[in-house]
Length: 299
Image 1 (cartoon, rainbow, N blue to C red):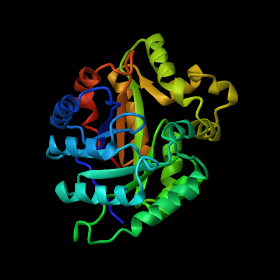
Image 2: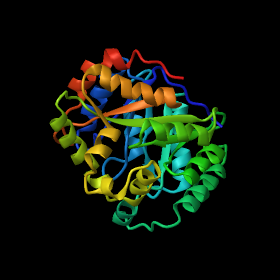
Image 3: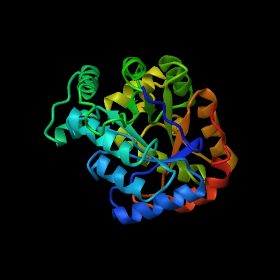
Image 4: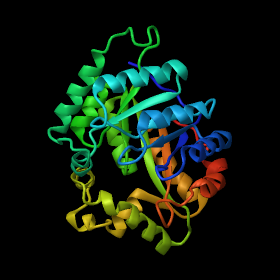
């Protein structure tokens, strides 16, 4: 099993699909210069994850690049494994392969079939393990982190992968996830941030962010496990859910939430800046927050 390391305890999660890749490369270079330790992005209906990873790794020198997540329905297991190894060969110790089963509507949009997600992921990992070592001989594979929320996928993260990448979770979930995967596995946690001191603005951004996720069973079930109720799972989430999942306020308030995740057992926290629109540029707020966030240290 591979054990990834990070040059800083805090990185960035950014939905950059609508931006030209050359612009995202420039942003990645700046984020590295600001001291952030990593850059992560999803794979829903936008850019292909491994191609984008290669472009961002090429534009930086130390920054870790992680897929958060690469959809396993977008490529077969051999393509995922060989692609990951190729990136590791080019950029040693800098690429992390986050893998996930995605969600039924997104898989169906790709004309795929979404069923038995745990079995699907277990079988996929087993097929990755069967890929010949002759592909990039002597290099080894990319660290694998699974998109995991519930206890069964967290257990698989511990037994068949190098750790977990969690999304839209509270510090309590982070503590539970650390206990589930054990002390030696890697835990990367996403934390949404509304960089404003106005509660109404923060809630508006949080509710807009949660709008899509609040109808997806994987997230709904996890929030119920965390102690929220059906009353919290209205479209866009209740105010209570929104404030539990999205940090806002003064710099020290935002830093405090990130610190809670690190204290609860996260190895690395990736912050996602939420604007009025999904296409808003997160860089101004990331510049302002960089001195405080990059000063944090992990466990």
